[in-house]
Amino acid sequence: MIHSIAINASDYDGPDEIFVTAQGNCCVALYDIKAIGNNSNKVTKVRKDRDKKVERASQNNPQNGPCLWMSDVSGLGHTGCVNSAAFMPNTHGRKLLSGGNDGKFCIWDWQTQSIPAALLYHKRKINWVTVGNGILNVDAIIADVRGKLIAVDIQ
Image 1 (cartoon, one colour):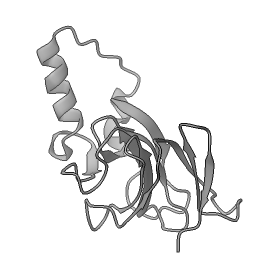
Image 2 (tube, rainbow, N blue to C red):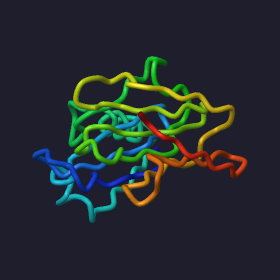
Image 3 (cartoon, helix red, strand yellow):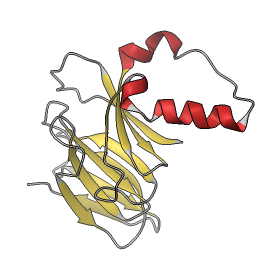
Image 4 (tube, rainbow, N blue to C red):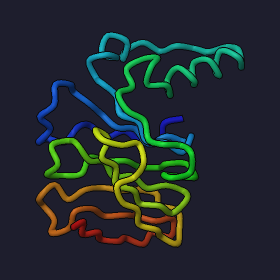
């Protein structure tokens, strides 16, 4: 299940139009918009449980579709549902931020690794992560389940 979607960073200089998803299966995944563009208006109904499992597996496997990158799911990254993901500003679309039910705020360098480049542990579930994009004097803001907002300055 996809919990949130963020469109690529405005300073992205790569060859693809990309977006990132925060998913319920403990992972963050990056997709190519062009690879799914012609199918984005179609709605597919799945009628059998075994079809759901097949569809879910193909969506989450970088080899089977438009997925360009997927975070590590062995426990080195998120260990609970990922609720929100965003592109980190001023990184040319290279770094991603994510937050989840495990209370982890992760920074990912998707072009070089599938494990987090950095981790921040928060005491509560993280509902949302957003970025400043040069407007705010912080790199990111985290919102937890109690409504607490935390400004994050990433060095």
